[in-house]
Image (cartoon, rainbow, N blue to C red; front, side, top):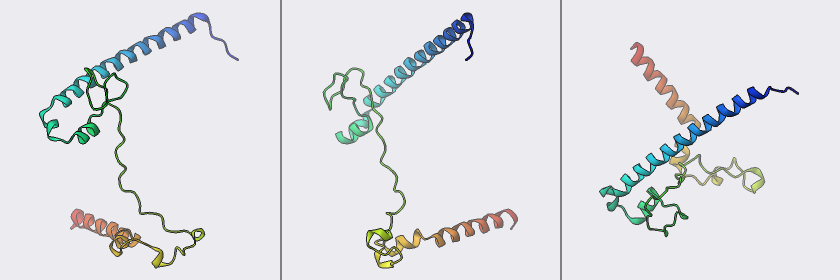
Amino acid sequence: MATLPGDVVRELVERHERELASLAADLDRARREADAVEARVRSHPALDLLAPLEVARLVPVVSGNGAAPGTTATAPRTTVVPRPRAPGPPAPRPTAGSGADPADPAADTRSVGSRLVTSHWVWKAGVALTAVALLLLKFG
């Protein structure tokens, strides 16, 4: 087990304390800037054109800041509201253990268009077409 001399440890502690103080000052500055921007957003006239639920979704008020829900305090804080997830891959097809045969086309509940667009053959054809178009642009 290695030991360090006392003056080295004191130097390390002082350096880290200075760094922490600098980071705390940066955080305070960022919070002040965020509060100023949020106040500008809340005072913008276009916000009055939206429905109250849309306003609450875009610029929500954190409960616990002394304000009742739906009202604004002098310095409201916003929360991070996760965006709705983008449509992901299609729903998984039934597996062998679920009682339905996954190879059975009747078990697939997607529409014909949806099955065609998500088919791997369509994607392969699209990639090949794009590659040919790029080659024609480059050398044609």
